[in-house]
View (cartoon, rainbow, N blue to C red):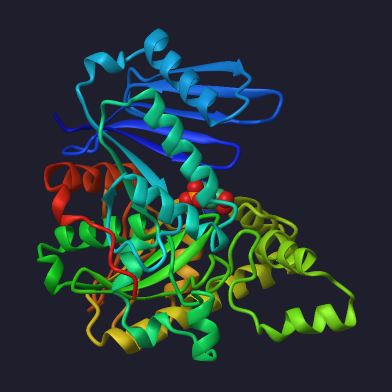
Length: 412
Ligand code: AMP
């Protein structure tokens, strides 16, 4: 009994997957969009995504809230299969974005845990409330199953104080819980473990730099299986250049815009998080469109790619310095897995650091872990497809098998 129903509940969408925590094979995957809005739809894929025999069905539905969305998900399983009653579900695993300083790993959902997730809503107002709505809807629909939460921040709670603190006034930082939390933790931990396995090493002996490059992007320095630094901070705005986010920017830009452009806080939030990054510099959010524009000679696209990869190289360099020995640099997520151009720009001219990629290997497309390092490289460069659902399922099973070993931490 290792099948887990994984639920990722956002403000207007709910993604779900039934996945075998041991093998990672998905029996069904689905997405419900436009929750709370008119013109919603449900897309349900029976069978392992992308494999032969997978069947996709699309329904036009209206889901007024997360409770209705979960009911529609149940209806999809009943009418389109596989029947959940035959899946022998071990538990339900929920993704929650912000776990604050209380969760260094997955936990069983209890009233206390839900209360803490709710208390953390100030830190993640767009994410924790819908995450919690999804948990409560699923608890009503599946009252007899264990529900487990896996936090995006948990993997980074191992960061030492020098990496997790800002040099901000200590009293203010403490009062408002301002510190660097980091995100994409399930992806970073999954990919780091896959890398160690591929290299034939124990997690505890493996140091890697993981570059999770999707629409959101973050870099993590992983030492002996634990995150020791990551590029996102209090919020996902910090760090790398992203699809629509600036990444690192002098905070005084916000002050300047407020004083001289008369912009309000919400406007600056929107500017930094949704109208900047690749979109703001090149006019394109999707890296495929940026690369197409660059191939057509567009100078904004050239600048965008240059900014994007230059920032990546700066993080790579700093994580090399803090880690000391590095076994591998790993590219993952939409851009990391699929863009040879970004990988090549990022890794070129680093021979003096014992790194480099082989241009032909970089262009190969095949499933699974790929070693794209040049022959002479001391540090491997790997491409590893991330699989957050499998990681959530795996961590969910850890809790189901030993719930007492996974408790919220005491307040610091
Ligand atoms: P994710 O957030 O991991 O789903 O990644 C989504 C992003 O991956 C998209 O916004 C695209 O920019 C990027 N992406 C997907 N396929 C490619 C590709 N073949 N080349 C470049 N970027 C890609």
